[in-house]
Amino acid sequence: MKNAPLILVLVLSYLLATLISCEPKEKTNSSEWIKFNDQKTGHEVWQITSQDSMSEAFYFYAPSFTSDDKYIIFKSKRNGTMEVYRCNLTNGEINQLTDENVGSACIHPDGENMVYISDWKYYRMNVHSLKKEMVLDFTGKIPAEPQFRPSLTNDGKYTVVYTKQDDTICLYRVNLETKEILKILEQAGGSFSHQLINPVDPNLITYAPLPDTQNDMSRPMEERARAQIINVNEETNEPYLITPYGFRATHDSWSRLGNRYYFFEKSQPGWLPASIGSIDLNGKDYTKHYTNDSIKLGHGTVSQDGKWFISDGQEPHNNPLILLNLDDGKTEFLCWPNASIERSLGNVHVHPNFSTSGNYIIYTSDVAKTGTHQVYVIPIKEIKDS
Image (cartoon, rainbow, N blue to C red; front, side, top):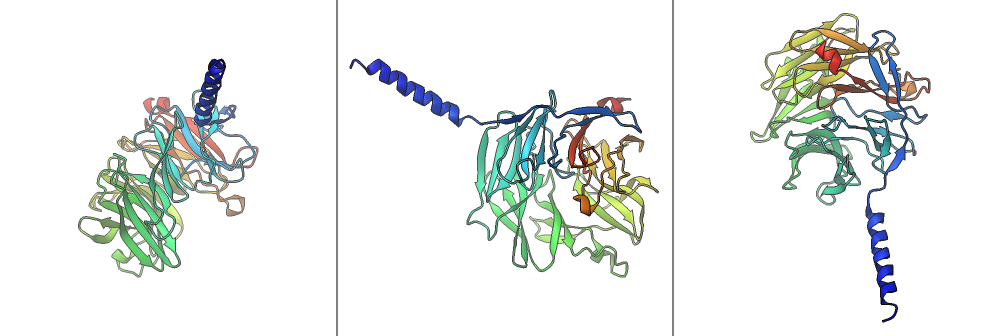
């Protein structure tokens, strides 16, 4: 055939074009970085986003850094819905990762992938290569679309999801290897929040029952629990985190080591003094690690090595970030995010969290000139080492 070479070239060109079209398409924005020194502390702060569109860090216990500290993930409303983006911390370049509205996401314990649920499906996406795979389709397996809590075991094998249908709310433990979806709690009426799986033992899951009864000091202690703990193997559901009379607990989370459960203790009534506390795996050894008489401590979590704790304050327009050394109790004020924390302005909370290495902090504030939620990062290695 005289035209065979030409046909072969056309076929190869078509195949090459097809392969190229299948590669991940990155929607890239140039760096939006604004680096400055905090006026009160002098510490360096990186404002990662600076568009007029709302951008937020994920919840305070949702890991947001890849393990090599190269990328962070965050959500932004640049296209009308809360999609997920990444920022390269070496040059500030921002890439869009999802085209769908994602309520919650986090970095997988492997430090490479982002995991999230969209349209009934649990996805895993490599934050470096952007290779995406569907891990589990919940369609037909549970009665309503699953809601994702960014809580996984350290081996990445287990997570928890929940569903709401009419007046019934259900909690499930999900084995991402075997695809087993185990219902561990079903509740008609009322609700719950902050569902968390122990990072080491997948049989232990905590949650905060709603309505919250902690402020009713006339109740027996066990009826004032901030958190219940489910033991899947023993088929028990018992009060776990209970504050003494005159106090309440909020914003609890497991340590990555799985051996302690951290929380904020607030005086009632009045909030102050406020403390950072923890209990052991058995709900004992109630320990106050730090107390402040004037700052309304509110959100934060422990570093993955268990040595440091980061806390925000919750006084509107006047709130610091405090780094606590859990070994010696010493504190360092990192900066003053001064988020509005006003419902009329979007109810912005700082929600700080550590990188895997513990060398960076991510948080949200609307204090910038745009008056819009923005994402910030603070490098803290030198601060910790000093």
